[in-house]
Image (cartoon, rainbow, N blue to C red):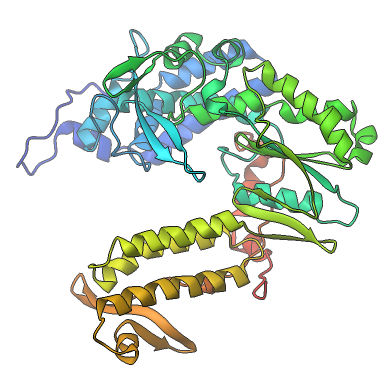
Length: 502
């Protein structure tokens, strides 16, 4: 697809007809665009497998300068969750004309990224996590290079790494934990790894030496700095959380950790088998299983420390621990523990508490809101949490969650009508639907149609076994295309047995 010769201008307010640039964007054949980018990505992956780094560089240059690549990069940054979050220039690309103009502006010659806008978001431990927000142009340039770098990252990735990778999820990581720990003969000890400030401390020198991409562009991103309260600060280490390409860079930094751990106990798989070593990593969170505490303490942990030190990283002594499986451990919001020899995976207590606290916060913040608006605010939170935990032993916990939410909502309803009796309050806010009593629901007109809005019930979510993706899968290798297509077919999904009684 060739780049059109057009004059890009924003549409005039009040005019009905779209501008030429708007029509070009809206009439783009996105299927063809994605196919052309995909073909280049597959060629990059093949060249990486063959260690033909000169060809990798040439293909990356071709992709990052292609019209299709630029269009797709802009499309992705203008359709994700952060599409309305501006950088330090305060600009967002919300119109088709602005998106096309942004795509045509992705030039490498003379490119200089602007500093990041520093914001903070709360963490589960009460602290705040710093985020760096690039401008839309820098975001699009990072998205463009992510298209070129991700095939390299996927080809070189650790087999059992699951975070920020296409076609993989937390459910795959948890399923791997189950496979590694469920048997009677499985490992009994687990090293819980925590890297101190991973994104903020990655060595720039290591990245520039080892990342297979344009070093000039990479250096500019790493040294762009950030602005906080009107003051510019330099960045001497790390890749900022909030940047589109940062997760890929972090994964590339940590790839090789699994091999380093395996080599710490034995050079080949057969001698390694008695040690029962399994590595499960999700971004910078990881666990390592082992047959004994001594192996994890005296062989595995030192190997991890050496691996991280070369990249400017270190383990957190406070959060890195070795735990017996009978005591259990939390990983990715879920608790993994053996009870009398049987492995059970439940939602972690911290995750449950966080949900209940979030629901209480929403309800307390909507004391004067209508019942319908309260339901609309609560449903995405409850549904998202329940769907995240639907692959594990959650049925009893779902029912408990529903009860706690009912208690919060009952107090909300009674407080609104202090002079009314409990029977009146129940009839106004709670209904009977089939076998379900106390359904928090409201009859309202939505878009002129009378509808009943119901509070989502976590207990209605089916508990379905997740089938783990094969560790060797590379989505940019055509050999795996048929397998990945099969995973999304209804017949494949039906193979996941339903555990309604868990």
